[in-house]
Amino acid sequence: MTVLRPVRAGNAFEETVERLLQAIKLGVVAKGGKLPPERELAARLGISRVTLREAIRALSEAGYLDVRRGRYGGAFVTYEPSEPDPGDLRQAVKEMGRAELSDALTFRLAVESGAAQVLATTELTGEQRDLLLRRLSDLNGAGLEDYRRLDTAFHLSIAELTGSTRLATTCADARSRVSDLLNAIPMLHVNLEHSALQHRAIAEAILAGDPDAARRAVAEHLEGTAALLRAFLT
Image 1 (tube, helix red, strand yellow):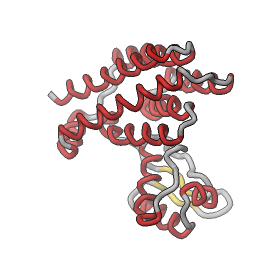
Image 2: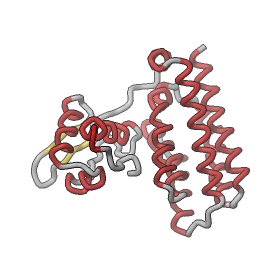
Image 3: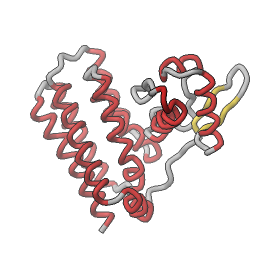
Image 4: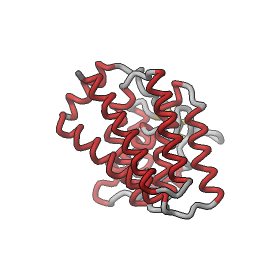
């Protein structure tokens, strides 16, 4: 829930919509899942409940949320990424621009490899080590419909486990900038197998306390993703 951080007062409504949409698109709250209770969510975002209701209403009207009333009510996620399509990928890149794409990939490489390097220098508790391994296990056992969401959870958990809120939110922002592109890449069996090996290498380097290996493992993995993006754009 790192993405659900306080918003600035000047553009409270717009930034609330942005925060909620980021949480939805990154799969922090999966399809069918419920957003935190209104009181808790408003406090987390640092906004009034009126502003929160307006933002939720806007996302409901846009088809991202289903608001239900009553004892078991709440705001439930209805968003589901479209099926991977190279045509959608090309359109998304066209809208973003090649220069922005290059910048987004470089930014993600810098912050995620840095987060892994930092985490590998951190003395983790047993609970933290278990969390990282659980995220890895969840990802390895994921079906295609849940793969992107659990892949995001694994990557973001690395930054979150550093204990730096700023680093965690920066990694979430970096992921958000390319999330639509990643969702548009067809899921290739060989690539998923390769990614599984890379994810394990990342986790093992972190747990072994080897910052250089952790940084290299993340860099290799993200450079592979960037290469796959470029392949489908040619």
